[in-house]
Length: 141
Picture 1 (cartoon, rainbow, N blue to C red):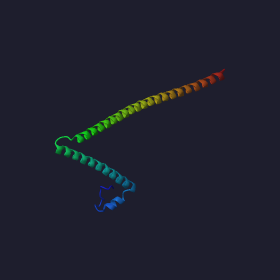
Picture 2: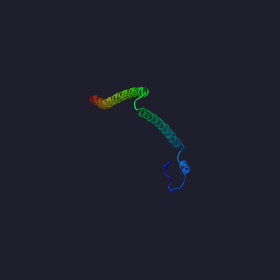
Picture 3: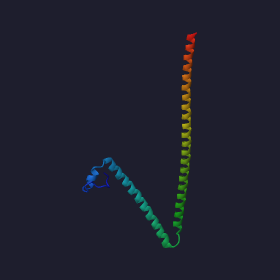
Picture 4: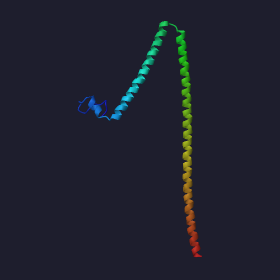
């Protein structure tokens, strides 16, 4: 049973439904919702700020030099962040390609090792068989 689904008989309040859920899971859910609320409040504040900026620009009819300068600075900061993220993506791609190459090389080495072990086992059996043949020939003489 989850918080969103009622009990089978349709009765029972929220307390009864919550009592059936493990405490650790409830704590995780509360923390998750709290984090979501904080993130959403930040987004709301950002949107309100953008609306205020747009209202100021639309009221003045022309771009104010300070507002324009501030917006240009924000654009430069955003461009810098985009370049940093692109660099991180390129580094991660290179790391993954290297890891894939390493894993394929490891698979090749493991396959070669297995072949060598099989060959060694066959040769060991051949040597043992030859020793038996030599002992048999030595005992005949």
